[in-house]
Structures are given as structure tokens and as C-alpha cells.
Length: 563
Ligand code: 4AD
Image: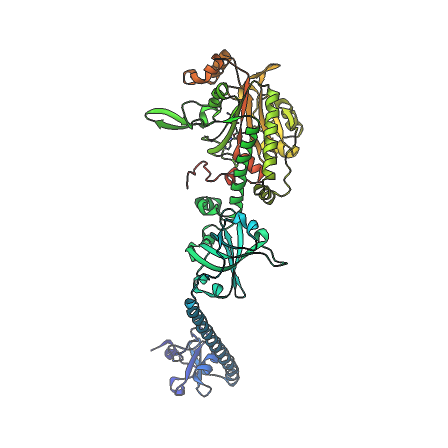
């Protein structure tokens, strides 16, 4: 016996009219097929809607049964009307949707019958790269690349094509827009399109001011849609480590690819400047058995059973080249097992280094200034890189000569006067390292390039020459740029053999592995100096990137050596 039958108080079982339906506001459910004693409805409105006005309704509450009151029945009838209207509306909508789906299916079927064919009567299309569109206006061309952006609007399909050399808007219309294969296109699919290149209509904009009215296309490779689509793989603003895992795809984005183009331009420009300045390019080894910038950041490797390292700097090798080739430079990877996990440190970076013979410290500073100013000028004048720098770093001001020259001791005064403390949180004193945070504050406050010179012997490398007028400090320089800090480090080199050997001793370095380097002081010593520029740091400054990681193709830093 059910709970209801046990607790009859209001209405006895015998009084229940034949064919009655039951409504229980607490335990019931409004679903078709209910209404019995053991499966009551929830609302009287639904009971009327389902069973009709004539069916008697029994209301169950707290185990008591009563016939529905006249007023409740009136309300229930009204509600039943509302339900009926809703159901009718839903049925209509479903019917309309079904008609729409059928129409769509018909369209898809029709689209499958469209055959995309090249019209042989059209002039032959000239195959071009997108960087050359301006030279082919009003001609029929064939372009190939990746679908960078895709949208359809009013029967037209707009594709922004990317081929690495540029972007081009291509418009598909008529059969091309309606073909089934067009509906299958996805971002990053590869495609070859032919058509007329024309200036974009008045009032519309597109990259380069031209667009392609496509008359034919061929799909080369479809990229995935759905979960695997490019927009799911590399979402803007995603966690940096996810974007780094997907670096191979993230590189296709407009920002990273722009930085890489500026990078190429910078390397080209600096090579040109070095050429104009009479320096010869050399390629020193990366696998070495000597250190340059301190043992703590050396990456070791086993070299046929011997101990070897990845180079920290090619400086020592460059020094050996001057007597053979004159002033030299190299653009080579340097490796640092860095303890500093900052936004300006990489484990592998592209090091631009130069070494110059028979010059004074001041000559070298002038040279560095010239190289930096001329290189940046060339990048800004480059028709590809110049506009990209403006896009990445709007309002960038090219540095002008002379740079502010400030020696280490004056920098300490400046920092103390401005209340910027040393790493212990105290006032700077002679011998303190000016760490990244303090250096950044000073550079950003001064707001222009600075030559910071004459660092103390004990905080610099073993090979640096002492200043003639103050033996506590060296003929050394760091070039500091706003927003980045140090981008270049250099010095005059010790040219006296005994002094160099004393330097090795001071640093606890065994001089025997360095015989080829020390020999430069034996076989015709000469005053010389040089410097190293961090490519990614110059780029971070030039392109206004937060971190040098954004300026390296596949950045390597603590914990990351992939992809
Ligand atoms: O100041 P550094 O250590 O100087 C040298 O290696 C000298 N032997 C160069 C020379 O005189 N030929 O490094 C030079 C520059 C720095 O100013 C910085 O721009 C860059 O190399 N650099 C780094 N860039 C990215 N990640 C790192 N871990 C870097 N370490 C240095």
C-alpha cells in the first residue's frame, strides 16, 4: 500500500472519483504519462493540460488527499492554456528549424556539385610572393600560403593569406564562395589562389591596399578544425609556458613573426655597419675548453672523454684573429648556465662580438656608439623592419650621439642621491655590484642610452685592463638602454703577459689551457679592446618586448630546452 493510501484523511479511498489524476506539489513531476497515485503531477496546470478539463483532480499534500477547489481549478485551467501555447510555439520553432536544416542540407548537396575549375580563357597567372603584390597591381597572379584569417559575409568569403613575406586579402565570390570545399576551409590551411590583384574599393582597408578577386583556388593542406584548431592551440593571452610549448605555431602570429623580421634586419644591418667600418666576420668554435665570464655559468659537456664547455663568449678567439685579420667580429651563439632567472637572461643567446686593435678606450666607446646608432638607423630605414618597429614600439626614438657617459663611482653617487639601495638594502659603496633592479631604475629614470664605465677590478672579468689613473678600476663599459638595462658589455684587454698571468692567478684559473690566448701578449702584443652585444636584449629594447624570450626563435632558459 502506498504512503498516500495509508494516510487518507481528507478524502477516503472510496470517495476518489473514477479516472481522477493526482497532483503533489512536493513529490510530483510534470511529465507526460504521469498522474497516477504513485506518480503524481507537480502542478494542477499540467494535470489539466495533460488530462483535459473534465478529469477530476485530487490534490495530495502531507499525505492528505482533497478534490481540487473551484478556485484552484480555475487557475489550473489558465495555466494549462499557457502550457498549451508554449508547446505549440516550440513545435512551430522545431518545424521551422527542420525546414532550415533541410534547406541547409539541400545547399550543402548543391555545393558538393560545384566543381572548381580554372577558366582556360583567362590570362596566365604569374606566381608571386606576397611581398611583391604592389608591383603586380591589376594583373592576374597566383599566390600560395596559409589562411591567416577567414570570414564569410553576405555570400562572400574573405581570406587573409600569409606566406611569411606578407599578407593579402583574397575574396571568394559566386561558385567559389558557395563550393563545399570552401566551407571546409580552416585557419592555417594551405591554399593556392589565382585571380586579379586590384586596389581595395574606396573606404575599405586591407593589408598593402590591394586585394585579390579570386577566380580559382586549390587546397594544398587542410588544417584541423575544432579542438585541434590553431585558435585553440595558441590562444592570445594563454599561459606563457603553453605558448612556449606551442612555439612552432605561436611563431606564425603577427607579433612574434614581426620581431623575427626585425631581428633579421638588425643582423643584416649590423653586418653592413661592420663591413663599412672595415671589420671582418669570423666564426669561432662553440665547443671550447676555456671560460671567459666565470666558471659558475659554464655548461659542461663530455668531448671524446675530455672535459669541454659550450662557449660563454667568443672574445678570446676574436683576440687571436686581430693579428691575422685586423678588426674582427662574429655573430655566434653564447651559452650561460645562468643563476639569474630574469626576463633578460637566456641560457643560449646570439652574441654579437667585436674586437679591435690599436685603439684607446675612448676610441672604442666612439666605435660602439657609432655601430649602435648606425645599425638602428638602418633597421628603421628598412622598408620591412622600419614599419614593424613602429608597430611594435610606437613612437620609438632612435638613439643619438653622444650617449651619456657616466663612470661607476658617479653612478653610485647618483643611486645614493636618488635613494636607490644596493642588494643588501643599504647605500651603495665602492665595490658593490649594481644589480639589475638598481641599474634598471637608474636607466629608466635617466631615459637615454648610458655608457657606464670604469668598473672595479674585483667585480669584472680577469682580462680587463686597469685604468692608468686609478688602478682600482678597469677600462670597462656597459651600455644601458631604457626599459632593458645592459645590452652591451666591453673593455680594453690586458696586453701585458705578466699582468694577464696575475689575473688568471687572482681568479684561480689554470693558465695552461689558455696558452693560445696568452701567446697574443708574447708574439707582438698590442693595445686592443672589444665588446659583446646581446642580440635579444637589443631587440627587446628596439621592439619594446617585456622579455628577451620574445626575441629568440626558440628560447632556452632554466627548465626549457624544447621544442
Ligand atoms: O657582459 P658580458 O658577459 O660580456 C662578455 O661576454 C664579453 N666577453 C663580451 C666581449 O667583450 N666580447 O655579455 C655581453 C652581452 C651583455 O651585455 C648582454 O647583452 C648579453 O651579452 N648577455 C646575455 N643576453 C641574454 N642572456 C644572457 N644570459 C646574457 N648574458 C649576457
